[in-house]
Length: 211
Length: 99
Image 1 (cartoon, each protein chain N blue to C red):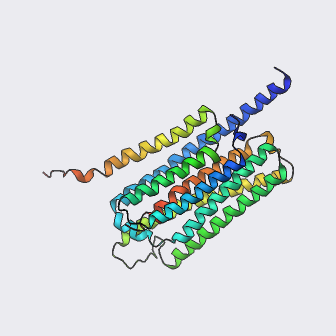
Image 2: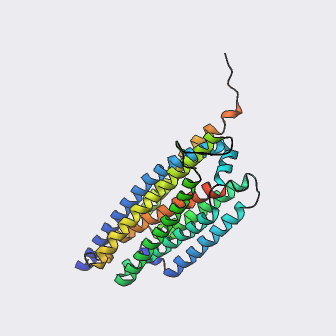
Image 3: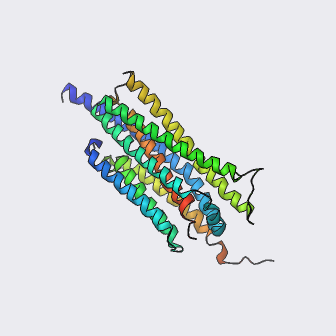
């Protein structure tokens, strides 16, 4: 074995090890969100009609647009990872910025939705007000909605932060992304957060539309 | 194991499939299918998640170890959901005698 191929093998081991670390972290995230999804399933099965009624207060159009925005950000993230592996610095920076921008668009739309709920007094707590009968159960639905989409949004904010640091380091040439798995590992996390939304969207916005 | 095996063309194709599935899942939600609404929504979501994992997250071209870790995530989630729901969904099946 020549010197170079031994070195390359070492790099490939390092890359695989760091990515495996990200995967194990994502495993804990699956169970973290999994507990919430299970809680939601229990109460939705307990009050199917009231949860459906409550879910009709969400804006399907905004939810659909946000789903499209997030999926598009996953595409730009995948392109960023490909550019990093090919050692193409400029495309990498462009795709990182696009991913950050789309993440911010998602959060912007999400906060508009939160604002609507605030105006409609649908935020659980002392000022919650609902004209129908089952106030307690509707409040429960919105508790799940805010906790689960809120935690998802926090994950997005964290992801945007990491992407911003990566973009800064690449821009200042303090980081050669083709020599490590930083961009690829961040990509795994970003796509995972996308997968969480892929399940949140139908569960909160869609299932009750015709029930 | 090189993840460079997935080309940009594949990414775009996967993205197009995901966007079509978004439209399908929203469209199906407006049809009255009874219980099948939930089944359809979750099946489509599952397929979307599989597409993201296999292609965007490179599972398809990753080592067996990554397959085991990703599979373990699904497996534990299934245990969590299946055991919990098998309790809650069957509670009404029997009446508990009062003394």
